[in-house]
Image (tube, rainbow, N blue to C red; front, top):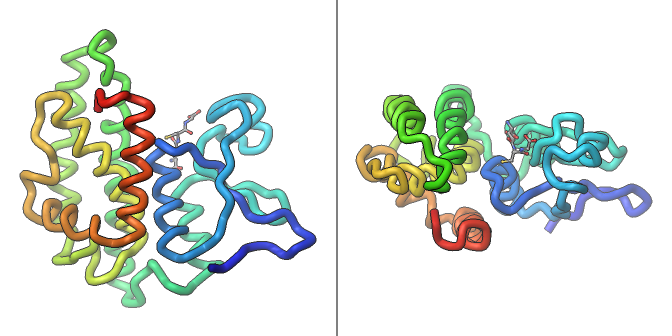
Amino acid sequence: MLSLGHPQEDPVKLYDVALSPFAARCRLQIYAKGLEIARVEPPGGPGSDAYKRINPTGKVPALELEDGSVLPESSVIAEYLEDRFPEPSLRPADPATRARMRLLVHLSDLYVVPPLVALFAHVNPAQRDAKAVAEKLAELRPRHDQLAGFLRPGPFAVGSSLSLADCALFPIYFFATRLHPLFGDKDPTAERAPLSAWWQGVRKHPAVERIDAELSKALAAAMGGAL
Ligand SMILES: N[C@@H](CCC(=O)N[C@@H](CS)C(=O)NCC(=O)O)C(=O)O
């Protein structure tokens, strides 16, 4: 285990919430790299004024560095951790494969995440707007197709080892595989061969298994089996 920070400095810490897919992305990377980074709850919770004084975006995750500066946004944190702690690398060495890894992250962040996050507002049947749900599901289906079109025979997203693409995609598909069926739609990983192969393969990695267990536990605690 690599412990971060010098004894006289504050250690690096991750502002984290158990159920956030974006925080889970950073935890997955941290576990896979064997880094020891403390997890802390944002004071007052995400979006609170107290937390915004530390991290102006108010969002989790955020990484607080030894000098007290704060780095939000999971994709930025992921690249920072790779630059600072290069081994074991979660970025493929070959430029084209590395670019495809970043492409998968972009496709997820820019096109899959927004409609997926919008669906969370409709989980409670009492607050559900069926038309809005249908629109978001219709937006998501071609986006899963597009992303699946750039997956390669794995078992991981861009080849034979875990990369930042898997760290970004696993927590998102953890929720997508639950949300689509909740609204009567098909599990997106089940009906697309490349996504299905990736989903089966990626979950065998010990760090992914750990995140899967953490998210499952947090989800059960938050939703009591509703999702
Ligand atoms: N693009 C951001 C998204 C982070 C995000 O939306 N986090 C949510 C929790 S899942 C949050 O902190 N929301 C509180 C808020 O927006 O005030 C990332 O990748 O880190």
